[in-house]
Length: 400
Image (cartoon, rainbow, N blue to C red; front, side):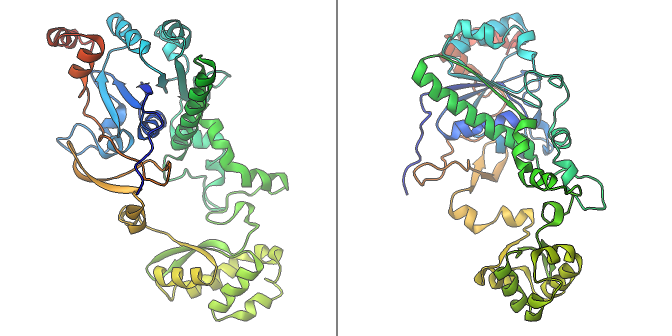
């Protein structure tokens, strides 16, 4: 297999981000070869370090999953000494990435207007909930809140139930992916002009494209858009998740030929010619009883048997996998999307690689997530020329 391509191996990222939105963006850049320097608070570090942390461990699995291919240094940006050290770091940086509340870096005296005077080639990237401008710029912005504010929550859940959030941090990851793309575009811009530029991503705005189907349905006058596992507005049928003997399976067979094949596999070919179901509009109108008929059939077989049968007959389907099944999926391991590593703090564990794949090769992990401040001595010595005694003094003054 080809060696992984590392197009950013001459790029240095100063990473001020925390939790998921920013760290995933910088991790993607690290997988592309960038030298990512994660700058953390000396006292607490990235807040996600404490999430799902086992007794006796200093960081949990979520931190490990979001921070491969990074070095960690600590620096108190609230201290005058820390700010001056940070400005020295910026001189040699290509990109600074932060996901603080809008205006935080300006209030600390470390905003783009200040940093670009130090390094005119600097790319300054920020990921926030609502953007750097507008009346909502300083509202709280965690993933479930943005799911609510973006419309995702309103269209998620059963038709007769309350709005539900997605079970995963989908908006954080969407925002991070857009932030990574913006940074890559800014690097290309700088290659052509020699000048740095700001990159700004709003998580709320990054979530809007997920609503394309619902916006289309709304434009057609459909107001009930919360349809459980059905299609937006319930216009497609059959299109749902059905019980199997050992779990659940998703089937999408709204297209006429696929619906007919499904009926034949069910041993009920006459359903395809039933006046209630011949046309899509009829199947949509009568989807509750159609779903009951399909469920009676799917319950007779295990998921894998259903999947093999349906896929072999070109009926769109997918097994609803439990998390432990996903994390042991042979397909994902064979492609290198998942891999086992021996983590220096967490022991044997499974991590996901970057989904970005250049030249056909899976992404390469240079190093697992670092302990808090793991690179302090070496980094401050090599980059700033500080002696061991000077580094120790900075630590005693709580600057690092």
